[in-house]
Image (cartoon, rainbow, N blue to C red):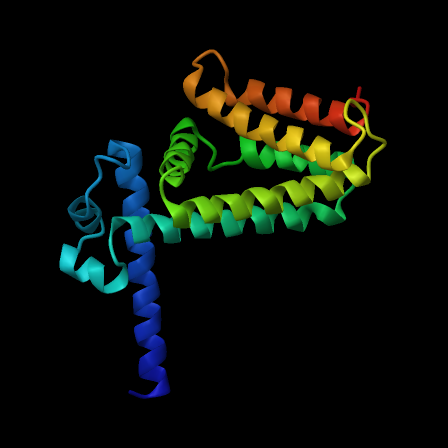
Length: 201
């Protein structure tokens, strides 16, 4: 196989993997992870299950890859904010998790499904733990740059801020009275209070 042929084959493989990942996402949103079968994912990706198994070792492997991609994107996006002022970083984080174009109750539900699976899945639990640690490290560095408010220790403030983020996103999914807009407002105001930054008038 020539280098050009190999490159084309790799591109084809990447496209097929993306189709499979998108199919998993759509199936889980429609049916939930537990009720989604490998055959469902294959059908949604317009291929046979045996063909899907050429790219992934099973349903769990597809989910591991999907979650790994999402976790990497989240960590990269928040890390890219670190050149902004602390106040601007807080605003952008609130937008990222509560006001982004791709943020919806169904997307939050998908991530909650992933977190639920992570309880009993060693690979997914490790991926989630690594993402959590990187997010908390980011928040710690952010709070080191602020006056400090309700919680003087930047590491403690990071723990509370991250718990607040995860908690509000979960609450949006389960509490019909809490909108994404309201969760955005609550997250933003609580983050500013934790940081010791007065809200803008």
